[in-house]
Image (tube, rainbow, N blue to C red; front, side, top):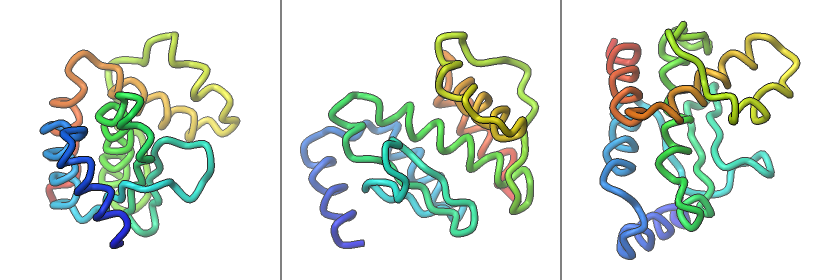
Amino acid sequence: MLFSSLISSFLIANSQISPEFIELKKRLENYNFVVKIESPPIRSTYGLLQVKTRTIWIEPLVFELGIALPTLIHEATHAAQLCAGNGEIRSLNLPFSPPNISRPFFTHYNHGLRRHLEAEAYAVQTHPDGYNLVLSLLDKHCNN
């Protein structure tokens, strides 16, 4: 926890965290999710939501890559899916799909539901107004 706080403080002090990232992180925490800026427990991932503990990990490297906010939007979509399923992750049945360019990132999942959940997260992440969209999804599904 201390290490995560130090990384967060460093990134904020060096203006590497956008105001939108900070706001989305706060919103997730208000809905009882823990957001850690540290390497996820599964290697080679930029973000991860652990359903059982409602913990979201964000790999610090994403700040250097310039993809911190899209990564958090992706994981926040999974958080909304978890809220919608009342403790079990489920589809939000969104009326749009992710762009074809993102397909290689989720088509390798064999399980149909997992593939669909990832497709939804990429659809929100790449949506032109993905930030406001994910905030509304969290408010709609987690505000119980």
